[in-house]
Length: 84
Image 1 (cartoon, rainbow, N blue to C red):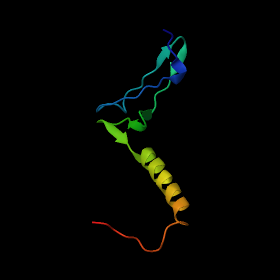
Image 2 (image 1 turned 180 degrees about the horizontal axis):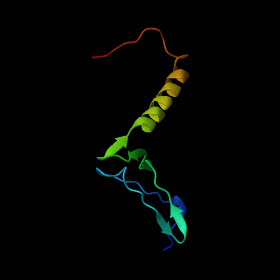
Image 3 (image 1 turned 135 degrees about the vertical axis):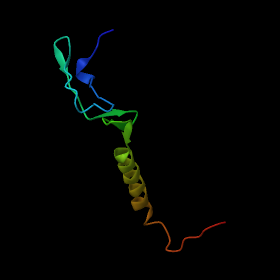
Image 4 (image 1 turned 180 degrees about the vertical axis):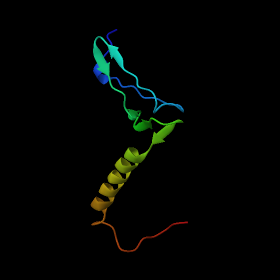
């Protein structure tokens, strides 16, 4: 199996994550340290405890919903009926 260092990142968690100066090299290619990593659609943030950023998925969801609503407004009536 070949390791692809260009698609890899280092992210640190824990109480001393800001104090660490890590340099990791694989096949003479430096792997960068980052503050957030995208994994399964959400961003994992570097912090003292486990932290997930939901900002990007929320923006994509509301962008899609607003796009659907903007296409539906011309065919919708002014009166909205609720069935209970």
